[in-house]
Image 1 (tube, rainbow, N blue to C red):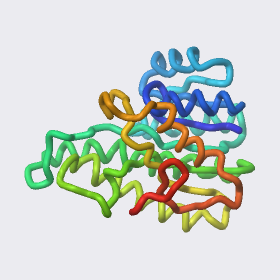
Image 2 (image 1 turned 45 degrees about the vertical axis):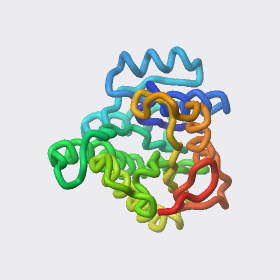
Image 3 (image 1 turned 90 degrees about the vertical axis):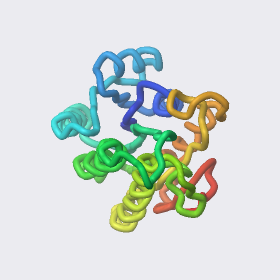
Length: 226
């Protein structure tokens, strides 16, 4: 199994890489800098391979697709984990829309563009999966007034999940959104659940059986209200 994880050098992404490598996957650990990716891959072990990938860079995405095609010929799992701007200091009525636009480039357009470019490689995989790491902050059912840049971009990522799942179902590609929960990371801050527990939700979606769900929003293998 060839699995690519964006933002794989720290936090939830790094732990997802570690758990997948432990399961025997060949894991492409991506980060915005080659140094960060290499450091994380070295620490994870021999099944982890570094790759520089800024999801806002079309050149990086094209280069990654070419590298994967040349080295492996296919891709089995794409984990769209990279995200920015947990903007607790903002409210929708006064939000800086430049901050929202910047967040959207990483949180929405990045996963969207990357999925489009890697789709031919996913179609060649035996058990292809796309996992979009979302958040309950993107659930309309429980949405409040905070984190407008983060929340709206995760809502949009959830919508993209539904669209892609419906479109790719016939190809056998399962597409799901995962809320890892409040996790104690640099973004989530102290006090959250252990990183390993949040990452396990993502790994669950990567390793779903072929008859598993698609187009869903899950945490710990259980549905989260949209």
